[in-house]
Length: 210
Image 1 (cartoon, rainbow, N blue to C red):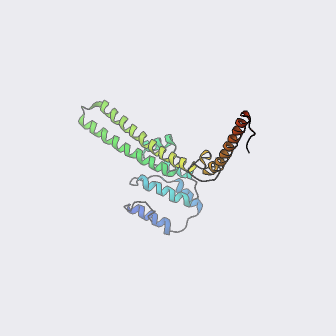
Image 2: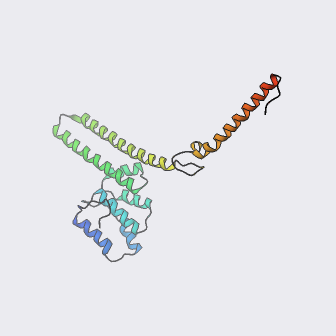
Image 3: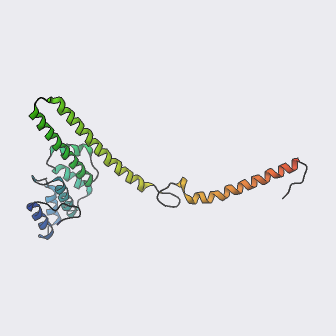
């Protein structure tokens, strides 16, 4: 009933729905698909709960990740959240859920700022525009931080040596390559020294030493 990391303070309707999903009569794939295609965020349902419902029912119905994302985007209640999700095009349901919560939070803050501006009256539209601009910049910073975090994880996973197969270095820095090339350089230097000594002795009129 409560997946790892999910909140425990859920409504009675949500608890009843989860109970029936697990212990209720079995549904065919067609019935599950019909239910999945009709999923919409309910009035008192949080974005987190709706994302979990989409994930649980979608995977029971055999839906792909892209289908889960599409159902989540089409089912969210807020038009502003829907617009941002369509614009940003998240690649996973987890990213879509995080983005939706960020937009909803900003939407709530903007709504509070509008109410305060209306009550104060003398603040004017300039103050509201400034608040909206500040909140928009904050949202972009949150999104950029999330993208940088994901790119760093991908970069760490992609640093692999093509010679030894170990993680954490590239081919040019491979310890095996350095170990094999070091004696060769030493040998070449020794031959060069011997040739130089022989030429010096010949110029001095002596037979070269071996």
